[in-house]
Image (tube, rainbow, N blue to C red; front, side):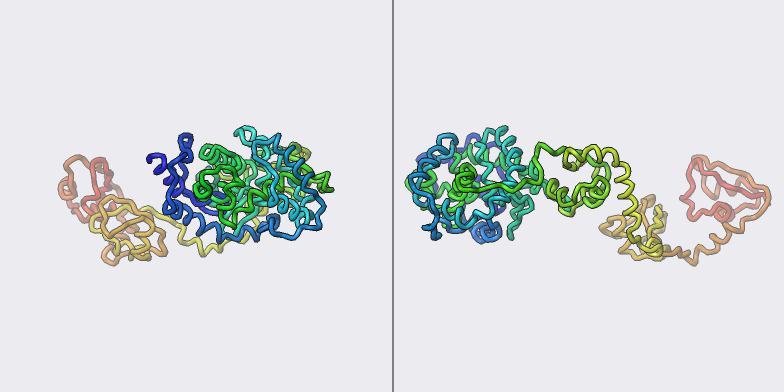
Length: 498
């Protein structure tokens, strides 16, 4: 019962990895397995899948990713030349070298033929992209001990377009939703979307696929769960009577997703037997091994890089798809990288300073706010005195009380003596009752004066008594003192003799 509850909580924390949102995934899933005899009830599964169905099966991904063919096994393909016996032989060969369970059945035959008939024109370009991406995928799939053939999943999900985005927000080669990507440490900002970063998103996909394999113990089921949701796979296993072969549970999967795994198998077959079907790759833009990675030291645009080192901006966008605005930001603590053809690396290092100078020049050409709009930037730090209140201070500096509260994050109108306030004055207003004091500062008596240092226990009255014909008001006027509380031990006071 504990396993069942833990498993249920896992599913409730997940929508879909690819086309729906998964807010939270347990960090360690090693101990979670499908219950052998304690299957979920229909009520349990309805709850699980309601989270999935609501967001996934309304997803238009099937329409937006042009490579995928909905209901491919129902297309008319009688004119495609590929005998069942030959296909059986070839699928058996593929099955022998992969942990996926590739076996012939009439439905898969129709899917393969439909791709040959309706998607053959996509393959030259797809194969060119694969020449760049597949070595990268294989590196990380191998590190995570995932079948290398899993690389074909990225074709089914995104047609190898790192900027692919469904209307519900699934993004990148591996179609991560925002929260799913966040769970797997893929950061998204106004400048950068790491779901579009081929390397980082591939690592995240490997981690998620590993999590699914630990749950189901079967790569075909992990693949199905990647696309249809773990809840749907568990439900299909239960309703099939406990079978765990994909083809045995396929009739119990939602119709909208039952085509994904066959599309994966068909893609694998067509790449493995591309020559036999006259599928010829276009020339790839570049190979992954022919690139290099550099760290930038200033915010720069693809156009500026292209201008200085001569690499086409379109190629820069292909190599660096994570940058949403074709701008590589420089942010302290974040080492954003620039991927370049190796042949251009020397040119970048040679002209790096010139590149940053060009960026400085372009920034300087941008229209700046007029000086009059900077008047508010003359910030002052005001120290609250005895008798002060917000209205009085606001009136003095020609601002609103609400402004002072906003600038200083004040929740109420209470002030304390000595408190420091940040104020952006519009104009200096001198309270009428203090005008004479301010004027006297500029009209202090001329002549000799003594400097008196305030001692502990002193007051204006006691100090005035020490000097003939001197009043407390004189001392306040001569030293621009607003309150008797303004003096403290160590304060220097001018005492005029005349």
